[in-house]
Length: 175
Image 1 (cartoon, rainbow, N blue to C red):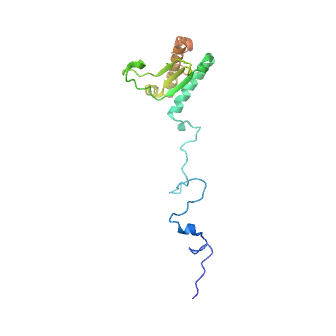
Image 2: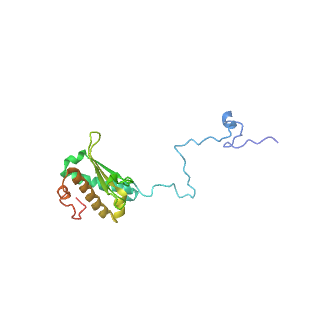
Image 3: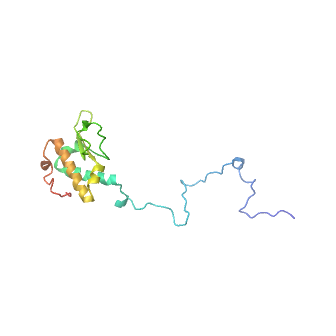
């Protein structure tokens, strides 16, 4: 009985492939656009939990930076010279092994001011984690951040906080 010819989609293993492919112990990589992700249970590919414009996808650090930026923009309208000041947000203050920073183990700074030198402009630093620990809601945090920024700007300018922002201490966070 003569050998039956296999149907068209099937090929014999030794015909139609280059020798380099047949001799390689590793199967060739799939040629597709990027890495292939698994869809084990047929429910579709995984995607983001929330779209980027939803506040859920904003990190706490980014939200805190936005609060500081809002406060700075509010003050820059009244004090244009603040455009030359660098405002920084750090997670925690540096460890105060000795009392060279001026804060002991009983109090943690919420912000700080570094005067300008010939090498760099004046800097105001706000520490995120100590502020977050002391506040419960976003509105309370916004008000507290604004008070800290006003206090540090007042120290930088050599003025009273009430003269930097007349609403300082009133309990209003919005501009």
